[in-house]
Amino acid sequence: MLLGLSAGLLSPQATGQSDPPASTPAKAAANAAQSAVRFPLASDQADQRSVFTAQLLALALQLAGWQQPVRHIGGVNQARALVDLQQGALDVAVASDQEALPDNLLQVPFPVRQGLLGFRLLVTTPERVARLQETASLEQLRRNFTLGYGQDWRDLPRLQRLGFRIVTASTYRGMFAMLQAGRFDYLSRGVSEVLAELNNRELNPQARLVSVPGLALRYPLDDFFVVRPDGAHLRQAIVSGLQTAIADGSYWRLFDAHYAQALRFARLERRRMWHLTGYGHNPMIEQAQARLLKRWRTMKG
Image 1 (cartoon, rainbow, N blue to C red):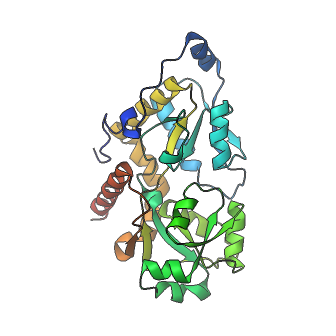
Image 2 (image 1 turned 120 degrees about the horizontal axis):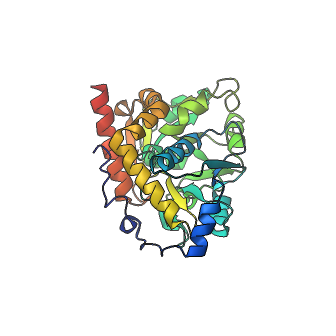
Image 3 (image 1 turned 90 degrees about the vertical axis):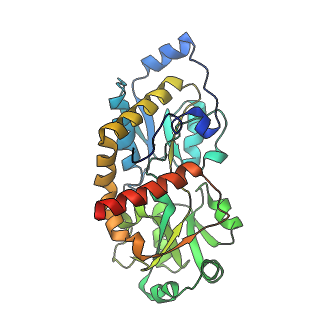
Protein backbone atom coordinates (compact mmCIF):
# COMPACT_ATOMS: atom_id res chain seq x y z
CA MET A 1 0.00 0.00 0.00
CA LEU A 2 1.12 3.53 -0.63
CA LEU A 3 1.31 4.41 3.03
CA GLY A 4 2.86 1.14 4.06
CA LEU A 5 -0.03 0.83 6.47
CA SER A 6 0.29 -2.54 8.10
CA ALA A 7 -0.63 -4.24 11.31
CA GLY A 8 2.78 -3.25 12.59
CA LEU A 9 2.25 0.45 11.89
CA LEU A 10 -1.17 0.67 13.48
CA SER A 11 -0.22 -1.34 16.55
CA PRO A 12 0.42 -0.45 20.19
CA GLN A 13 4.05 -1.55 19.78
CA ALA A 14 4.57 1.16 17.16
CA THR A 15 4.16 3.78 19.86
CA GLY A 16 5.83 1.86 22.65
CA GLN A 17 2.48 1.32 24.38
CA SER A 18 1.08 -1.96 25.57
CA ASP A 19 -2.50 -2.90 24.81
CA PRO A 20 -4.79 -0.88 27.07
CA PRO A 21 -6.83 -2.92 29.51
CA ALA A 22 -10.28 -3.87 28.38
CA SER A 23 -12.99 -1.53 29.55
CA THR A 24 -14.96 -2.59 32.58
CA PRO A 25 -18.71 -3.07 32.08
CA ALA A 26 -19.32 0.27 33.78
CA LYS A 27 -16.92 2.06 31.45
CA ALA A 28 -18.34 0.30 28.42
CA ALA A 29 -21.82 1.40 29.41
CA ALA A 30 -20.59 4.96 29.90
CA ASN A 31 -18.96 4.89 26.47
CA ALA A 32 -22.15 3.60 24.86
CA ALA A 33 -24.14 6.34 26.57
CA GLN A 34 -21.83 9.05 25.32
CA SER A 35 -23.90 11.20 22.96
CA ALA A 36 -20.96 12.19 20.74
CA VAL A 37 -17.22 11.88 20.30
CA ARG A 38 -15.83 15.18 21.55
CA PHE A 39 -12.99 16.58 19.44
CA PRO A 40 -11.40 20.06 19.78
CA LEU A 41 -11.42 22.76 17.13
CA ALA A 42 -9.84 26.19 17.25
CA SER A 43 -12.03 29.02 18.48
CA ASP A 44 -10.59 31.41 15.86
CA GLN A 45 -12.51 31.07 12.59
CA ALA A 46 -9.34 32.01 10.71
CA ASP A 47 -7.60 28.87 12.00
CA GLN A 48 -8.54 26.08 9.59
CA ARG A 49 -5.74 23.66 10.50
CA SER A 50 -7.99 21.14 12.26
CA VAL A 51 -10.58 20.84 9.47
CA PHE A 52 -8.78 17.92 7.80
CA THR A 53 -8.23 16.01 11.04
CA ALA A 54 -11.87 16.49 12.05
CA GLN A 55 -13.03 15.16 8.68
CA LEU A 56 -10.58 12.26 8.83
CA LEU A 57 -11.76 11.30 12.31
CA ALA A 58 -15.38 11.36 11.15
CA LEU A 59 -14.47 9.24 8.10
CA ALA A 60 -12.59 6.66 10.19
CA LEU A 61 -15.41 6.30 12.69
CA GLN A 62 -18.01 6.03 9.94
CA LEU A 63 -16.04 3.27 8.22
CA ALA A 64 -15.63 1.46 11.53
CA GLY A 65 -19.38 1.52 12.13
CA TRP A 66 -19.12 3.77 15.20
CA GLN A 67 -22.61 5.01 15.98
CA GLN A 68 -21.98 8.29 17.81
CA PRO A 69 -21.26 11.44 15.76
CA VAL A 70 -18.25 13.73 16.25
CA ARG A 71 -19.00 16.88 18.26
CA HIS A 72 -16.58 19.77 17.88
CA ILE A 73 -15.49 21.60 21.02
CA GLY A 74 -14.19 25.11 20.33
CA GLY A 75 -11.55 27.18 22.04
CA VAL A 76 -9.16 24.43 23.12
CA ASN A 77 -5.43 24.88 22.50
CA GLN A 78 -2.95 22.01 22.25
CA ALA A 79 -1.86 21.98 25.87
CA ARG A 80 -5.41 22.26 27.18
CA ALA A 81 -6.60 19.43 24.93
CA LEU A 82 -4.25 16.94 26.58
CA VAL A 83 -5.43 17.98 30.03
CA ASP A 84 -9.06 17.68 28.93
CA LEU A 85 -8.40 14.20 27.54
CA GLN A 86 -7.00 13.05 30.87
CA GLN A 87 -9.92 14.57 32.75
CA GLY A 88 -12.55 13.12 30.41
CA ALA A 89 -13.71 16.45 28.97
CA LEU A 90 -12.58 15.35 25.47
CA ASP A 91 -12.59 11.93 23.81
CA VAL A 92 -10.08 12.43 20.98
CA ALA A 93 -7.53 15.12 20.15
CA VAL A 94 -4.41 15.41 18.01
CA ALA A 95 -0.84 15.84 19.21
CA SER A 96 2.39 16.23 17.30
CA ASP A 97 5.01 15.12 19.83
CA GLN A 98 4.47 11.47 20.72
CA GLU A 99 7.44 11.28 23.07
CA ALA A 100 6.17 14.06 25.33
CA LEU A 101 2.65 12.71 25.76
CA PRO A 102 1.36 11.50 29.12
CA ASP A 103 1.73 7.72 29.35
CA ASN A 104 -1.94 7.06 30.06
CA LEU A 105 -3.22 8.58 26.82
CA LEU A 106 -3.91 6.08 24.03
CA GLN A 107 -2.11 6.88 20.80
CA VAL A 108 -3.13 5.89 17.28
CA PRO A 109 0.16 5.23 15.43
CA PHE A 110 -0.78 6.87 12.15
CA PRO A 111 0.70 10.22 10.98
CA VAL A 112 -2.51 11.85 9.83
CA ARG A 113 -0.94 13.92 6.99
CA GLN A 114 1.83 11.46 6.10
CA GLY A 115 4.49 13.83 7.44
CA LEU A 116 3.40 16.73 5.24
CA LEU A 117 3.43 18.97 8.32
CA GLY A 118 7.20 18.40 8.58
CA PHE A 119 7.92 19.90 5.15
CA ARG A 120 8.21 23.58 6.08
CA LEU A 121 8.16 26.70 3.91
CA LEU A 122 9.36 30.08 5.12
CA VAL A 123 6.77 32.87 5.15
CA THR A 124 7.86 36.48 5.39
CA THR A 125 7.21 40.02 4.15
CA PRO A 126 8.39 41.25 0.71
CA GLU A 127 11.25 43.35 2.10
CA ARG A 128 12.83 40.28 3.73
CA VAL A 129 12.47 37.82 0.85
CA ALA A 130 15.80 38.56 -0.86
CA ARG A 131 17.90 38.23 2.29
CA LEU A 132 16.23 34.96 3.27
CA GLN A 133 16.46 33.59 -0.27
CA GLU A 134 20.19 34.32 -0.33
CA THR A 135 20.83 32.47 2.93
CA ALA A 136 23.54 29.93 2.21
CA SER A 137 23.03 27.46 5.04
CA LEU A 138 20.77 26.38 7.85
CA GLU A 139 23.32 27.74 10.31
CA GLN A 140 23.04 31.20 8.75
CA LEU A 141 19.26 31.00 8.98
CA ARG A 142 19.45 30.17 12.68
CA ARG A 143 22.09 32.78 13.44
CA ASN A 144 20.91 35.75 11.38
CA PHE A 145 17.10 35.63 11.47
CA THR A 146 14.37 35.41 14.09
CA LEU A 147 11.60 32.82 13.80
CA GLY A 148 8.04 33.39 15.01
CA TYR A 149 6.46 30.44 16.82
CA GLY A 150 3.41 29.62 18.92
CA GLN A 151 4.18 29.72 22.63
CA ASP A 152 2.26 26.49 23.32
CA TRP A 153 3.53 24.47 20.34
CA ARG A 154 4.93 21.24 21.69
CA ASP A 155 8.18 21.19 19.71
CA LEU A 156 9.18 24.74 20.70
CA PRO A 157 11.84 23.47 23.18
CA ARG A 158 13.40 21.32 20.45
CA LEU A 159 13.83 24.25 18.08
CA GLN A 160 15.24 26.37 20.87
CA ARG A 161 17.80 23.65 21.66
CA LEU A 162 18.73 23.56 17.97
CA GLY A 163 19.75 27.21 18.15
CA PHE A 164 16.87 28.99 16.44
CA ARG A 165 16.32 32.57 17.61
CA ILE A 166 12.62 32.49 18.44
CA VAL A 167 10.00 35.07 19.32
CA THR A 168 6.81 33.48 20.62
CA ALA A 169 3.22 34.52 19.95
CA SER A 170 0.36 33.87 22.32
CA THR A 171 -2.30 33.47 19.60
CA TYR A 172 -2.43 32.01 16.12
CA ARG A 173 -3.88 35.14 14.50
CA GLY A 174 -1.52 37.38 16.45
CA MET A 175 1.48 35.51 15.08
CA PHE A 176 0.74 36.73 11.56
CA ALA A 177 0.13 40.28 12.74
CA MET A 178 3.47 40.23 14.58
CA LEU A 179 5.26 39.12 11.40
CA GLN A 180 3.74 41.97 9.41
CA ALA A 181 4.70 44.40 12.19
CA GLY A 182 8.35 43.31 11.99
CA ARG A 183 8.51 41.61 15.40
CA PHE A 184 10.43 38.73 13.80
CA ASP A 185 11.73 37.83 10.35
CA TYR A 186 9.81 34.75 9.23
CA LEU A 187 7.43 31.93 10.06
CA SER A 188 8.03 28.26 9.36
CA ARG A 189 4.75 26.82 8.06
CA GLY A 190 3.92 23.28 7.01
CA VAL A 191 3.05 22.63 3.38
CA SER A 192 -0.31 21.48 4.71
CA GLU A 193 -0.88 24.97 6.19
CA VAL A 194 0.86 27.64 4.16
CA LEU A 195 -1.28 28.08 1.04
CA ALA A 196 -4.52 28.40 2.96
CA GLU A 197 -2.89 30.89 5.33
CA LEU A 198 -1.48 33.07 2.55
CA ASN A 199 -4.91 33.11 0.88
CA ASN A 200 -6.73 33.93 4.12
CA ARG A 201 -7.52 37.65 4.21
CA GLU A 202 -8.06 37.54 7.98
CA LEU A 203 -4.44 36.44 8.45
CA ASN A 204 -2.94 38.18 5.42
CA PRO A 205 -5.25 41.19 4.90
CA GLN A 206 -3.12 43.14 2.40
CA ALA A 207 -1.74 39.97 0.77
CA ARG A 208 1.73 41.12 1.86
CA LEU A 209 2.92 37.83 3.29
CA VAL A 210 4.70 35.56 0.83
CA SER A 211 6.54 32.26 0.74
CA VAL A 212 10.32 32.49 0.27
CA PRO A 213 11.13 30.84 -3.09
CA GLY A 214 13.61 28.02 -3.31
CA LEU A 215 13.93 27.10 0.40
CA ALA A 216 12.33 24.48 2.62
CA LEU A 217 13.00 22.75 5.91
CA ARG A 218 12.34 19.08 6.60
CA TYR A 219 12.01 17.20 9.85
CA PRO A 220 9.81 14.37 11.16
CA LEU A 221 6.68 16.17 12.33
CA ASP A 222 3.02 15.30 12.07
CA ASP A 223 -0.13 14.99 14.13
CA PHE A 224 -1.47 11.77 15.62
CA PHE A 225 -4.86 11.00 17.08
CA VAL A 226 -4.79 10.61 20.85
CA VAL A 227 -7.64 9.07 22.84
CA ARG A 228 -8.68 9.47 26.47
CA PRO A 229 -7.27 6.86 28.90
CA ASP A 230 -10.45 4.74 29.13
CA GLY A 231 -11.20 4.92 25.41
CA ALA A 232 -9.75 1.58 24.25
CA HIS A 233 -12.81 0.71 22.15
CA LEU A 234 -12.82 4.16 20.57
CA ARG A 235 -9.12 3.89 19.77
CA GLN A 236 -9.65 0.52 18.12
CA ALA A 237 -12.50 1.92 16.05
CA ILE A 238 -10.23 4.73 14.79
CA VAL A 239 -7.51 2.20 13.93
CA SER A 240 -9.97 -0.03 12.08
CA GLY A 241 -11.50 2.90 10.21
CA LEU A 242 -8.12 4.24 9.10
CA GLN A 243 -7.12 0.81 7.82
CA THR A 244 -10.32 0.68 5.77
CA ALA A 245 -9.82 4.24 4.51
CA ILE A 246 -6.38 3.34 3.18
CA ALA A 247 -7.63 0.11 1.64
CA ASP A 248 -10.64 1.64 -0.17
CA GLY A 249 -8.85 4.85 -1.24
CA SER A 250 -11.07 7.23 0.72
CA TYR A 251 -8.13 8.42 2.82
CA TRP A 252 -6.20 9.57 -0.23
CA ARG A 253 -9.26 11.17 -1.80
CA LEU A 254 -9.70 13.27 1.34
CA PHE A 255 -5.97 14.00 1.50
CA ASP A 256 -5.81 15.15 -2.12
CA ALA A 257 -8.92 17.29 -1.75
CA HIS A 258 -7.18 19.20 1.02
CA TYR A 259 -3.51 19.16 0.02
CA ALA A 260 -2.92 18.42 -3.69
CA GLN A 261 -3.09 22.14 -4.51
CA ALA A 262 -0.72 22.93 -1.63
CA LEU A 263 1.80 20.39 -2.92
CA ARG A 264 1.62 21.91 -6.40
CA PHE A 265 2.19 25.33 -4.86
CA ALA A 266 5.14 24.15 -2.76
CA ARG A 267 7.11 22.56 -5.64
CA LEU A 268 9.31 20.79 -3.13
CA GLU A 269 11.42 19.23 -5.89
CA ARG A 270 12.64 22.73 -6.86
CA ARG A 271 13.69 23.82 -3.39
CA ARG A 272 16.85 23.47 -1.35
CA MET A 273 15.72 21.14 1.40
CA TRP A 274 17.50 21.62 4.72
CA HIS A 275 17.11 18.70 7.12
CA LEU A 276 17.03 19.59 10.80
CA THR A 277 19.52 17.10 12.16
CA GLY A 278 19.16 16.95 15.90
CA TYR A 279 15.40 17.44 15.84
CA GLY A 280 14.95 13.74 16.59
CA HIS A 281 14.09 10.61 14.67
CA ASN A 282 10.64 9.19 14.10
CA PRO A 283 10.92 6.30 11.63
CA MET A 284 7.15 6.13 11.18
CA ILE A 285 6.94 9.75 10.02
CA GLU A 286 10.18 9.60 8.03
CA GLN A 287 8.96 6.56 6.10
CA ALA A 288 5.59 8.21 5.50
CA GLN A 289 7.32 11.34 4.17
CA ALA A 290 9.42 9.28 1.76
CA ARG A 291 6.33 7.45 0.48
CA LEU A 292 4.41 10.70 0.18
CA LEU A 293 7.12 12.26 -2.00
CA LYS A 294 7.28 9.12 -4.14
CA ARG A 295 3.50 9.11 -4.56
CA TRP A 296 3.48 12.79 -5.50
CA ARG A 297 6.25 12.33 -8.08
CA THR A 298 4.31 9.41 -9.57
CA MET A 299 1.11 11.46 -9.77
CA LYS A 300 2.94 14.36 -11.42
CA GLY A 301 4.85 12.16 -13.82
